[in-house]
Image (tube, rainbow, N blue to C red; front, side, top):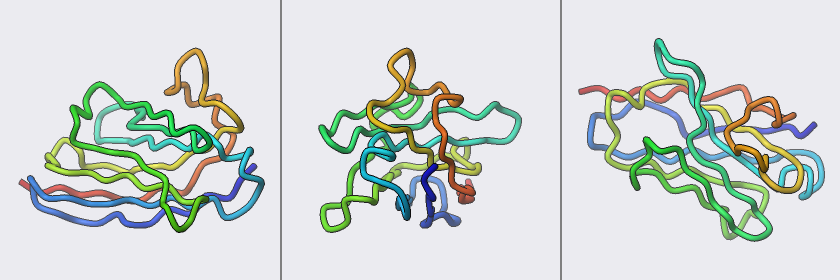
Length: 129
């Protein structure tokens, strides 16, 4: 497993922006080649937000993202990915988790949580209307 360290959560008003960071603090690059963000919002099951395959840059997004969020690899720290979240809505409030999977993101469905062996502790995002 890979140790994942998340940062960047906080509180923001609706329409605002936040950037979440996830750093793979241990393990090989292959062990965390697929890095993803999931979220747990009140009253809902945890859902996939976005994922990226760091070696080739392939990206995946949840349907609800609607071009508001972007996942990227940090240029000066290849073991770090960030999730840029714009035009935040109150429905985006929740705990955001970083996850990592070796090699390619889960082929059947990148949102299949059981295929991610490494998880971060989560970071709270609160959007007020």
